[in-house]
Image 1 (cartoon, rainbow, N blue to C red):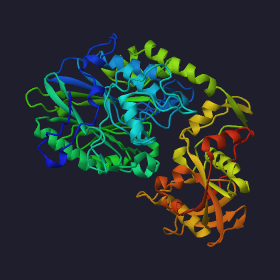
Image 2 (spheres, rainbow, N blue to C red):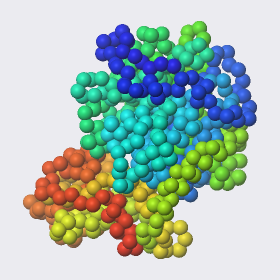
Image 3 (cartoon, rainbow, N blue to C red):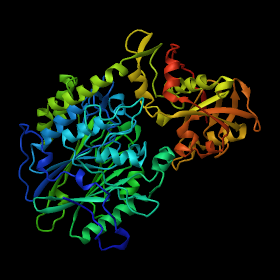
Image 4 (cartoon, rainbow, N blue to C red):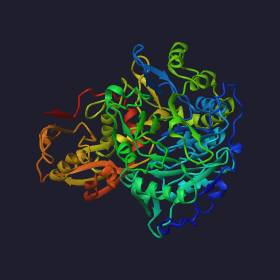
Length: 605
């Protein structure tokens, strides 16, 4: 195993090893090996078998969660789709161990967003808990996702290298003793420092498997600066993913490495009717950046592991698999390769792949049996024999117990379930926007008249289990709003507000990415109108908004700095900072809100 070093023959690839990174790398495959699990071995191939297992968008979901389910349908018609209880680090560890036991060589990978936007059991401990558990499972290598940059590059490197963070009144570091850091590296070929053009992380890593060199190349979506708070990416440049992968692949080939694997934190999705068909290689209705990117990545790359969109798919693009296994540890993408010991390349004809659900102790027996009946060998046996890992469960339980006093603290009651579903704004979006308006409406607190929040900042539903009103804990509120953004009140004119709302369809797919409005703002979105003319009949508390009318608008600090491509918020004047978004939500929950069923954005043809 080795990193791609600065002695590469291509001048543009004169990379320096990031300081301290060597100490993070597992020294041998055996160093990451797990206790053996009884399983049926995979029949010997004519070459050297290598099993790759990848999790993506884990987001620190260490615990089994009652509402963490996976929509699954059989590969052939066999009744309706199932909602499978899945996930949890102990179940993920057990499945990885069962799959490892079947083959002589295996690697466990992460395709990014291992941390960030996470439940309290991860976020409270600055995600040291998640890294500790992944060390225990035996994660071999990964790549950063956009959320690894939420707290900036200094914190990312600390999380990798170890050491305690500075004291913080709300977060805990080194809660269980000295924090040693990650025993796995993160790779990124397309993230460079603006000051000197050097990579922040190693672009690639080479592992020797049965005498054959296998190269792993990482890349994170180049749109990271638009979806992370600017302070998180300060001093960094994110370049084109495919170009960076291709340059790195060429350098590896020049060193004699022919078997190549790309991990890319970028994704796509299938059409709505097929999103539970995550093993259909035809990938009906597939669209999104990763599929276009895959066609530009050099044919020398044998596998592309995808992420970012939280979707499940297993597509064949130009004869090679492009795979993603959902999110939150509910699924695991498995790709079985055969390495040719003579050429050092991958025997493409022998490549096999499968997305597997991470079944846990709460998966009903009937549902488990149906999944197993649809899963072919050799993955069937591993899925059947996987058991939750007791050691990992103990580690998760230890962190959960430390977080429990804060997580279980009741903060309010709700009069029904708030969800993120909706054609435009959602009940959760209305709840959060109303909370932010209430927290800043007083003249001394900014005099806000309108609140807008981004859908990407709403990380969970808020469910009412039983008869309303239902209690809500701090942990549930935190999981919904985990970023710790502060509120910013600013002045915009009616014309500026309209331009920002028009900008909801600024992306290439022309699909609106709805800002969630408070009850004080209503407008009509006419889909058939030309760009720039879709927002109509804007009203503030029922009264028409005029172009030159000054408005006090509150948003979170992420949007205030131009996040999600809403750069118009940077023009806001007379700014006044407010409380954190989570505090505003907790204050709203204390009022006992009920879901508002009425959308504030009206769709029209």
